[in-house]
Image (cartoon, rainbow, N blue to C red; front, side, top):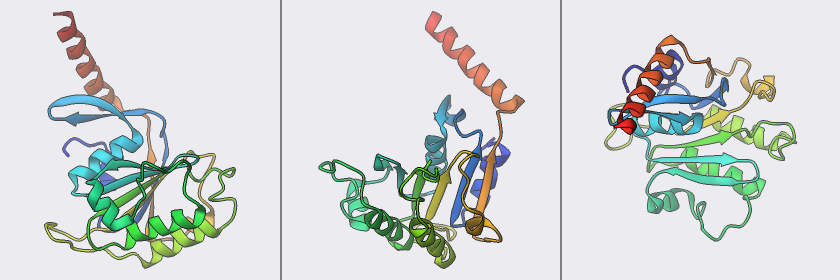
Length: 212
């Protein structure tokens, strides 16, 4: 992807270096992206998905409190082969803590496809997954044990990812991130002049076409 902002380029550069990322800062905004020559805006989790797809990731899921896992990208048969029935249409509630950890572990450790799970606002204190250290401990362990893999069709090794999206008032605990060389925090800034100009030009063109 060309003309990415600096914080997005930082993410891309570290895909082969870091197995876990956190995005904080201006996370509730929308972000311009070029899709087949058309500038559109996406929520942060969808913006990250677009980057990962272009970087060759085959499976992308999101996990949210009270919702559970949701499909963002990937062939359902491949997802089922790697993660089991995580996307079963018959599910009526989010999976248990134990089942959630199992699914994330399978995603990180699989050697079939490059995968990423986006944890959206899971770090808030009221959420059951961080009310105890169990969830964080298991994900910290996965972070330390993670290794980049070179799968068929890839030109360079990369990690299966865990990506946190959280607000600054709900940070991850210091023991999780302090001196953790396998964890990278990316602070999303407010749009700069270039981003605003690109978006404005796109909106202007759209309004012009609609008026014809």
